Image (cartoon, rainbow, N blue to C red; front, top):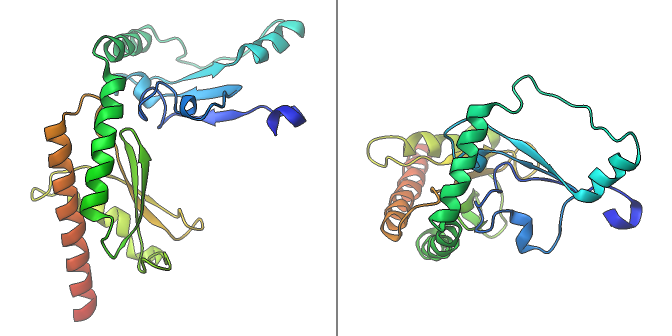
Length: 223
């Protein structure tokens, strides 16, 4: 459709790109190449704040045929330390074959999540690829009815997970059903995670989800 109407296809891969889904770019698994792509996070592996924009050669070609210049700038663009950190991270990903590990451990993570929590009455959906997974929470599993926004389900699960009993960090999200309602958490282990560690992660997450909703239902009953 973009090619048909002359629109630029822009893909935001700040979270899902740079190896997170098992290939360097998430779009490589779909056979669709963007005109412009944003990257970050995995670019520097968290060692240094850094982000970037990748531009297709046909966009560059259009600029060359026009003004021949692309005037842009950021106050801290081209920061040498950030660029050095990003370069070293990419070298490690390549030298240690971490993309293959992301794909392999992702399949294991998917299988364990399906086995352990997919049938939980408050888990609506589990979706992801590689080491980037989202888990949706609902009141009604059949109708996928979300919780009320003021229940703060995702944030409360995140906070409970940080306690000593679970010691697991998950990323909370809300408003994903209609902009207001809808709770989910993101699970995104490091690229060099091992099969033993994946097992620990799923075990802790399973206890967290089970105990959270058991406690929540008990509180609702007492109130």
